[in-house]
Amino acid sequence: MGVGKSTVGRLLAERLDVGYRDTDDDIVAAEGREISEIFVDEGEEHFRALEKAAVATALTEHRGVLALGGGAVLDADSRALLAPHPVVYLSMDVEEAVRRTGLNVARPLLAVNPRKQWRELMEARRHLYEEVATAVVTTDGRTPEEVTQAALDALELKKA
Ligand SMILES: Nc1ncnc2c1ncn2[C@@H]1O[C@H](COP(=O)(O)OP(=O)(O)O)[C@@H](O)[C@H]1O
Ligand SMILES: O=C(O)C1=C[C@@H](OP(=O)(O)O)[C@@H](O)[C@H](O)C1
Ligand SMILES: [Mg+2]
Image 1 (cartoon, rainbow, N blue to C red):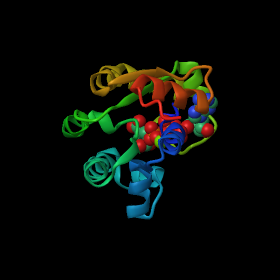
Image 2: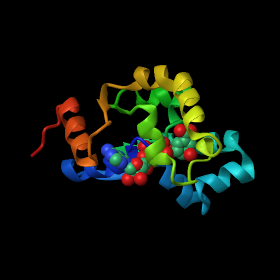
Image 3: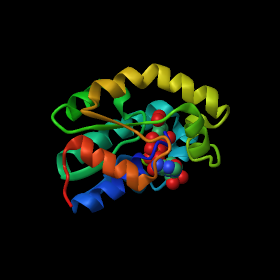
């Protein structure tokens, strides 16, 4: 969460001259509500069901760059659907995470104690990110443009 998947995904799609899609945006558009409202109104489990469907639909319909929400990999079926695709895992350390997410309330899972909650989520999820990734790109101290270039290099999609 907050590592730059949506920001870098958009830049990567521009660099590759392909379409960009984001499963969180798809959910918000379909539901007509913000992610935080879905969490408050119906809970995380309901959000995960919407997310699972959004991932499956996007991976079927879309050719280009797809940004996922940070929890999409929790679902084993979604992980299996990612297996044939190049997947970039963007990483950062906890202090960078707090800087990037701390100033807004759009991420309900970090709402109370961002540092502690981010650490716990990463402890639970890190192995899943590593499982689905075909490339790992560190984002600390890098601008979004530099991260995008590093992702292109890591994927060996070095389009000018
Ligand atoms: N490399 C970066 N350096 C500094 N800030 C960044 C970087 N990438 C993204 N950000 C900022 O961090 C916040 C979260 O980015 P976002 O793309 O929404 O992350 P994600 O989709 O992974 O949650 C945004 O405010 C964005 O502008
Ligand atoms: O990691 C998570 O569980 C979540 C990440 C968010 O997306 P970003 O990773 O784009 O912030 C969003 O899907 C929701 O708030 C839950
Ligand atoms: Mg995002």
